[in-house]
Amino acid sequence: SPRLFNLLGLAALLILLVDTQQLFLPRFQLSFTVLLFIALFGHRLRKLIEAPFRSDPFILRRLINPVRHSFNAGVSWFAAILAISVTSWIGSAGWLSWHFHSLAPVGVIANLFMVPLAGLVITIAFASLIFSALHIGPVAALLNQLNVGAAILLTSWAQFFATLPGATHHVGSSDIPIGFEVGETLRIDSMGAFGASANLIQLPNSVAPGSQNWIVDSGDDLTYRNQ
Image (cartoon, rainbow, N blue to C red):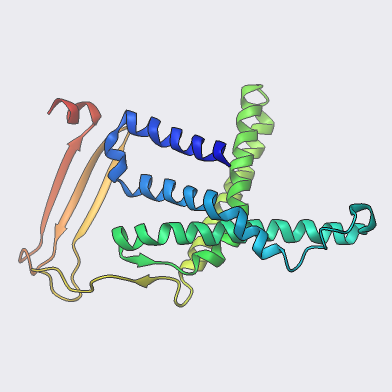
């Protein structure tokens, strides 16, 4: 609907007003492209998927038995999840290929399981915030523990789907960068908290015989702005 597109455009505008560099970051590009694809094609694809399985729309609702009503609701729910999964994968495929030279076809199937669970995690977290604001600590603590279990299950599913054969495919150039030999890697470990960060860079032997370690301390946001 126009309202959805207006909200999406307003969100992007507010983010870019705060930091225009967000436009060139993968997280911004992926988030808004995926949401745009869902808004453009999600509803149409859902209708297309569920059409062969739903009751004839010309039949009066009171003539449809409760079992059929439940089946229709289940079909609508599954079609919505599948439509979101397919449209989000298509919307993200271009940016994932460009930035990370990788595609994960398994995401279309994985999202059927993970999207509902992720929604449950968000719902439980929101309920926990409400109970915390009402100073009902025991209930909030119980919800937090429940959310930990749901998050662990979500992570386990992600790891399972990522290890399936053909889960991901490398796209783009497979050439080894100049100065590197096959089997060697450039290792970068990033560490940081509260806006500060540092990076440990370990050069491979072919570039620096005997291996060299470099630490780049970029400091916090205030330090960066004052440089």
